[in-house]
Length: 356
Image 1 (spheres, rainbow, N blue to C red):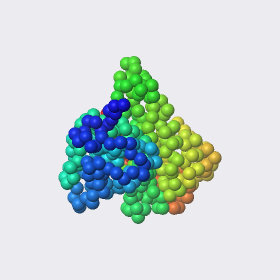
Image 2 (image 1 turned 90 degrees about the vertical axis):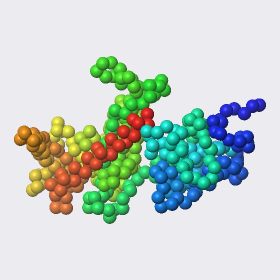
Image 3 (image 1 turned 30 degrees about the vertical axis):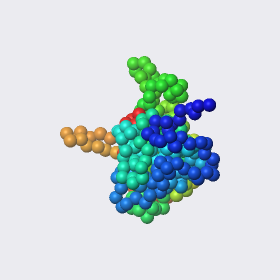
Image 4 (image 1 turned 135 degrees about the vertical axis):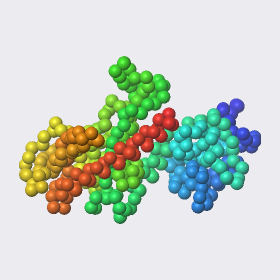
């Protein structure tokens, strides 16, 4: 029976690279595949080109990639010139050079390697991505994503809590394909149905470094609160969550409190919590979703260049109820840290749009 066409068939290679089925414990590798795999363990010099294998393998060790591939069942089943491990590094390089085509990204990825490596075609690289699928990349993100700075790094913590924030973006477009329409639905616009399917991306970042800690995405119709609840699963007691007024629902606040994390969340102006105890600094205590919270009201004024003044009242809900250790003016100033995710979010959406 003739061998079916595989992802490696677009590679310029000799006949010996078309190998048989590969067992899990096999160590036999053909020359080109062996040269490429061994290059992934190469110790890079101090200065490596951006996206180079040496640089990527320092951040993402080959042993970790192999473990993720084994866990997700994405290891190759026969000998190939483009192993699955190489495919994971290639996908990571695509994120670094989102404005370049696949062949140019491959050239940057293997530039300067002394062993002779394959020269894959566009089709071979496309099939390589399809072969490994999204599961290894998703699992790799789950393993590596997390706070970047040490607790002692200036600007990362408030008292003993690491400040994090989450926000969503619902304006991401994806290719006009029937599978995307069936999954994401057909959102309506002012002129009828939208021309492309749209995706909602919800991220949580460390405000001090803007490093992504967690991310989820899906149909826009589910709403920001639905995805925000998924991001609370890995909150820890040493975190202080900063959030906008779209995330002040009772269920979400109770879920964050159950994780042991503190929060400082702005609530909508239409919400007027009952005053239970008035504190000397002007804040007051209230009860929401079975929690004793502190409400801080601050009037924000802005003066334009022509002298016009406008403003609004900002109402904050927090689990930091002690006015002595957490003065009201200090928490109002701390809430401004939430805007760090507004700077991190455009970077994620810009890379997404270029990739699409």
